[in-house]
Length: 203
Image 1 (cartoon, rainbow, N blue to C red):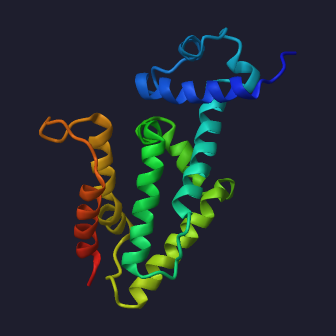
Image 2 (cartoon, helix red, strand yellow):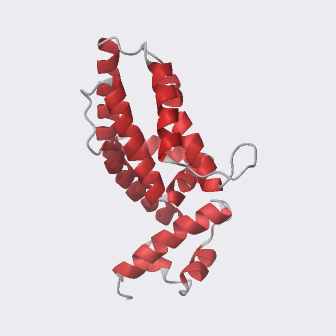
């Protein structure tokens, strides 16, 4: 039986994310992963049962890491502006430090895996998301109760609150704007966009 190597296991996870972003989930194979890692085809099977097990565990681990990052210093009792500003800061910092993760989760959400993961995240087995869901629910309820914001459908709220941030980050990751011109994110641009999103949500 081969001994687990923590460093090699981490390499396998990192290269799996890179390979999935490069080839897509449907084009992702253990052979391609092993080649990217510079290891034998049998090495990933030391750490994971199969391709599905590997993808599932990466989603769970990265989802938990992202949830922790998003919740950092976030107070559900905060005002709309203060709470939303912390959320933007946390999400921006996380995406800048982990540039491939957003693209990785985009692959998940547009794949045949999506329904399976959605059911997992909304069930008891997706408990790591409960703190995030609870905090965001309390935050939205509080700002609505205080009259800072209208009671919006959650999809509408999310689109206005975070859609602009994720669009800018996508342009940044692609290195070009919607017009095809070179694009690079900046603090000035982030917070100018934040003000517009906040204005759209405020009563």
